[in-house]
Length: 277
Image (cartoon, rainbow, N blue to C red; front, top):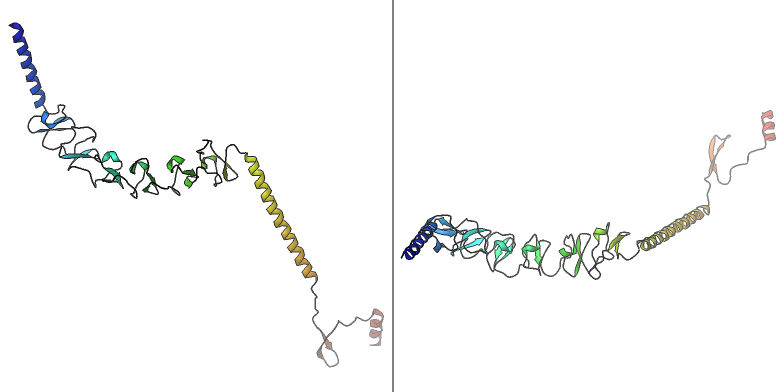
């Protein structure tokens, strides 16, 4: 008899405690029916009111928003979806939606949409290249490593280029060259060109030195030949004399005679002429 009374008393206390818990706001819940009247389940807590709009939420977890609401950008909003709302990643949209061009869309792909990061495009087969989602090419797009480009491209001097490596591309330091996808050997920069890490940079430098020396020698020889040719042309020119002017003392007239300058008389004749005068 005493045993039965103890059981009944225990059940009564348990029911009373359960009712008190349900009637207290802020208690844990998963669905609104677990809360008393004039309360709804928002964020797994019984909250006074009839809406969870504006409350924090996580779309993967139930109990944050009402069935008539949707978790968009970590907040409960009215409506069955997040279409057209601002976003940065897919997680900020509702299920079966993607974040493309910073807006939630219903499409399964984001090709052609505006983007800043690969995460804003539609999955691993799409990349953000030149601020557009694409699945074909990133050639010309800025990159930090070959992972920023497609598998058929390489990051050469911080720009995506066609091909599995950067061999032959211009460079300043080794970091401007890529990792070859075949042997996973890092390339190196030698004489402004990317070469294989197993190749000798001395060979490339030696070849470049020979080429530069040959070009310089040809230019020097050409200059010498041109200079000699000009000198020979100048030495073969005939210098013509201008006609000289002669004054006629008798007629006090200026006469111009053609030909050579008159010969200067000998010193003896000049002395005799002065004595006679």
